[in-house]
Image 1 (tube, rainbow over the protein chains, first blue to last red):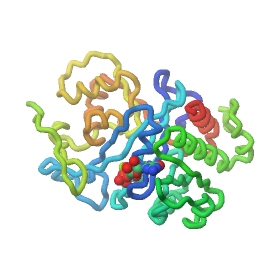
Image 2 (tube, helix red, strand yellow; image 1 turned 180 degrees about the horizontal axis):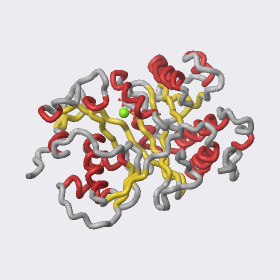
Image 3 (spheres, helix red, strand yellow; image 1 turned 120 degrees about the horizontal axis):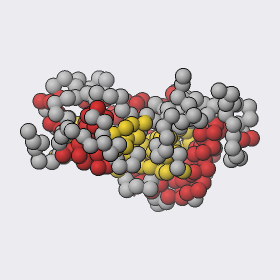
Image 4 (cartoon, chains in turn orange, green; image 1 turned 90 degrees about the vertical axis):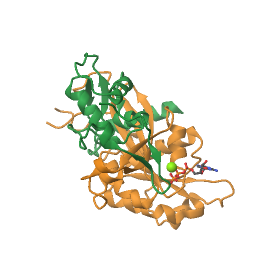
Length: 213
Length: 123
Ligand SMILES: Nc1nc2c(ncn2[C@@H]2O[C@H](COP(=O)(O)OP(=O)(O)OP(=O)(O)O)[C@@H](O)[C@H]2O)c(=O)[nH]1
Ligand SMILES: [Mg+2]
């Protein structure tokens, strides 16, 4: 029988662990974003390049030499006693993007940060999540002195589907980051295939549709 | 047998360089399936086995449910090496592990509602 959250086989204190990815091009503010919304000091978790890269070095012989690592930003938000949300800032450099596939497994959704000075840098992240059917929002990180765009101008510039939300955000401010996460989850709820999903977005004790088990 | 005390060093071109083989006692693969988001917690059971300082440190980090990613971050060890240490601790019964919730059920509305409520409480 499938893993079922409602008949939790793990008693407290084990909460349910969920994750959201924070993606975007080089230098767009991913580390800043994860750090400001996280309740723990920003951490970086490393993977061995030799371990995860299909077309990089084989693991054989790893004991004989040192290995290169790639770091992911990591943060945590305790939602309640039963749910904890983890944030993973994906590596900015495109040469490390093969790691995203593993990070995407089981993710609720993603935030794609965009820098208006270099909007083209967010194209690949948008494509990546679109192709994998992972729900995302685009958060325009407004850097000082950069030209202010209206969200709709950004949508047109990166050729985004009309249903994908575009929000303005300041990655340095926690509440701004949390609001971006709220927008993401609301978007995921409205994107649900279930007919009544939009109505139930108002929080209440929702009974899962297959709760007859 | 001791673990060398010389720490990790840096490489300008890429990330940090380490010798994963040393810490993991020569093994390069975890013995159990652990995800970055698996939650690990010390059981309090006294272990007969002594592994090394990294194992003790890892155990000390998971007195409450703690993710593999977080333990790896604190240990400053790559995730794959951390998973090997934690697998050892699992094998000896020193820790228990809860796998993460893989959000692959798009109709899991109640879960998203819980996330939304939790996030709104942060504001
Ligand atoms: N004005 C302004 N500056 C920001 C904002 N977010 C980040 N910065 C600054 O932009 C620089 C880069 O931010 P990072 O968070 O390191 O970006 P990153 O995406 O993690 O970068 P890489 O990991 O190198 O790809 C830092 O100096 C931040 O202080 C923002 O919202 N507004
Ligand atoms: Mg960064």
